[in-house]
Image (cartoon, rainbow, N blue to C red; front, side):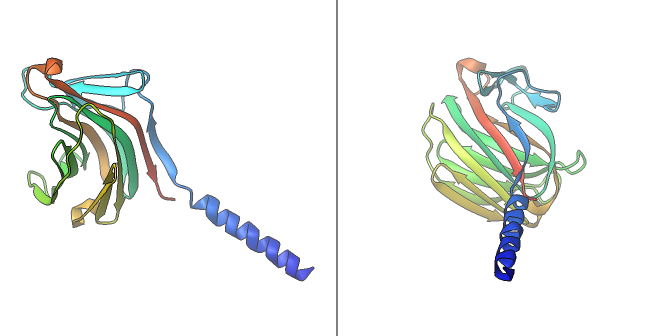
Length: 203
């Protein structure tokens, strides 16, 4: 009887560990309705409809589209799908600190290569990695990006890259989706699309 009780207690303990180890979903976007106020800033034109967030360059400012969401995270996993439409050359996910800090780290998923840019301090940009990796235009691609301490690991389809820098371990207060959609001709030139955005953190 004692052995049975010990076994039951061990099973309860292991089950508790399993449940406590489950990641916490801190953001999940279905993009089936207008964006919430948490998407507080952006450039270009963005629409969320039928499960897809679509952005393209517009307006007088010559800058690719970007849409920024407020969200505090340190170690986390970011997952979504993206595609480049028309003349779009890259999609990116950028993570920022406070306004006085600026950008922290940037994952660039281009039609020809992947890049990771670190920003050790405001106004400074350091290329941590550049790797050839052609992406098919007008097709969906999947990205899974994990922050663990000072290391960033990203898997784009079946390609995995890793980069390390002290600034990667900093607390992120917002992130942006964007890239280069094809130029000032706007939607006629091209667009960027994202879907299935999900961010989780470890317990």
